[in-house]
Image (cartoon, rainbow, N blue to C red; front, side):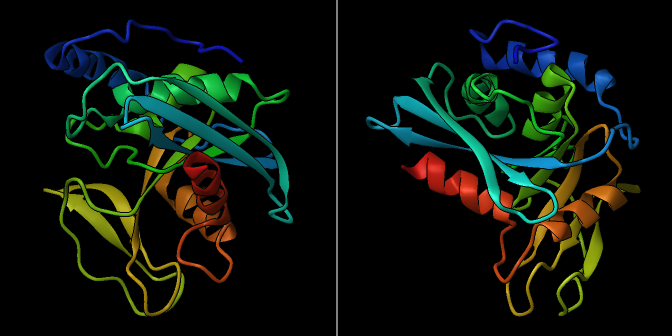
Length: 219
């Protein structure tokens, strides 16, 4: 599976920000998807003194959360670590991993931000726009915005606000643990994104999609 939208990756940080500004108009924040039978998680690890990126995609059954397929690909890191530009460091190798699958997933949960990003174009948005697959950002930490602490029970959530704009939800996936930061990536609403993340949660803080992808990306 190749990218539906393409652009250069060998960019300076200022040029990368300009790409984000240009592509964010393509982000769709409505539920536009067919049946969801295959849900993927994606993550990137690093090897060789962080000179090589290891991109992993794990595809699970939406019903049973059993692993159906997976792919791991490597490529040299060509973009520096710059806050807010994580996708330029990680999306190329994730595209390689997605391209190695026989069948693309119906939905991707990304270990990163969706629109909960200073330019409303985090990694999940970037990957979603390039592939036109619905995506959700599921981040362990906050990049931008303010929020009240969500309730203590599993499934409780509170709005993540940037001024008057709701850019995501702060979701308690397990009682007694730190919440996750969920935001729409592409072709999905926040309400649906929150529900889909909870559908992938078992007895752990992280959804099974993320747990599988992290395991693969870590080697």
